[in-house]
Length: 512
Image 1 (tube, rainbow, N blue to C red):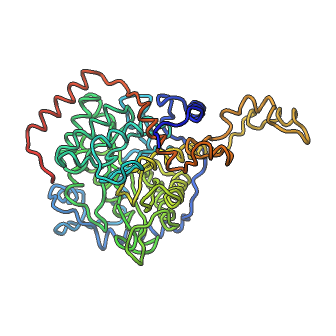
Image 2 (image 1 turned 120 degrees about the vertical axis):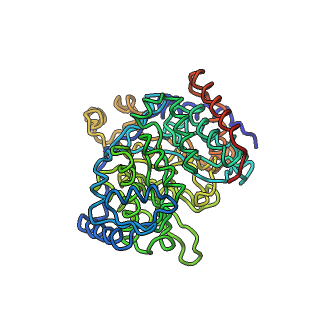
Image 3 (image 1 turned 135 degrees about the vertical axis):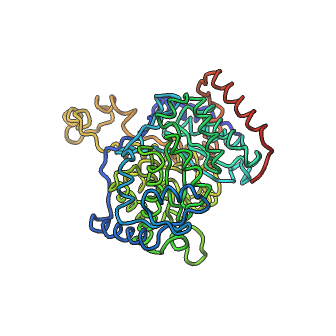
């Protein structure tokens, strides 16, 4: 099958894209939600979970492994330190996080792309972390730096994604200890949206900060957030040396950390929603408070990546009702702490972009929007439980995100939206197709999918009988062919490349 679409269909796609969003430069920088938070957890229920968390922190505590500096920080703050186990008196951590901002700006190198994280805002970022990539042409394979750049370009081209993300796939064709240079550079070079730094070692975090300083200026980076990064707790109730090392680097440089327990309930937490939420709160609170001891006022995000497992096979499950309950409950707990909240995404355990992947992803992304999430990682491209970044699913998910933008706007009750002139013009028994109001508003009246086929059966046959995945296959190729990158100051580009060359030459390649 040819990559190119028939000329008539290509023309329809082009017109549809112009109606929806225009070129990438006109994309909405982030969602300002105009709908209320849907809360499942009552205030009384939240208080019981918080009391349970206080007991976990005081009676069980958390381990901070192989980091004497962190243990000393906790000791000076008044925590009870016994070896690597740290326990906290009731209210201690809640008091510490009060210095963290409830909302902050992450600056992009294009100021029009700056995002506001917190409050009633939602920032959507692509998939993060998969070692594999897949598309309908080549199938499943290890990711490369070319794939990485392609996903950065697709995120840049999408009007519905506000953020370039971080490890959109692992470029396994590059050495483990040096690939972070090329990943951070790709975000800076091929996009002007905000991006994430490396967390796989403290020195890689320092390299990321240095590249940000070259791009934005040292003083600007010290006083402003230009990177956000993912710090995972090693659940249950452990922070390891790698994550602690990266957290310290970024907090000291005033860059945002998303402190996010990574939990598959039933294996890494209790099987109950309330028990898991108690553990999530304990882990997130401890990490968020640590950032404030390192640099009071540094931006930090309360995170929760929580799903369940199959109690038959032990495999992760996504799009489950329990996952939505956990997401919703954690969002409320974060709001009660006055902290920005990260969760959600377009999750699925499916191996291909099929009905299962669509259903499971829709379940999670809808809960994300309705629950009041502020930063959503994995919003596009996630497949196979996070092991695979899919080209087709990336654009299918991005299309779904466009629908979420419309939902988050709520109901317009302006005079134009009330449409009294249309009702008066048409009257009983008429139709609205030719009404002046319809003519004024038809192009923007309803969301028009770039993936769904709403034509007649006969037209669908004539267009090649394509299912959603094959239509998405055509779309991502069209987007990459149409990609035109943002400008990057040549002096900054040269300085970044010189820094990377010098640093890469200073130590041998390693796959550790």
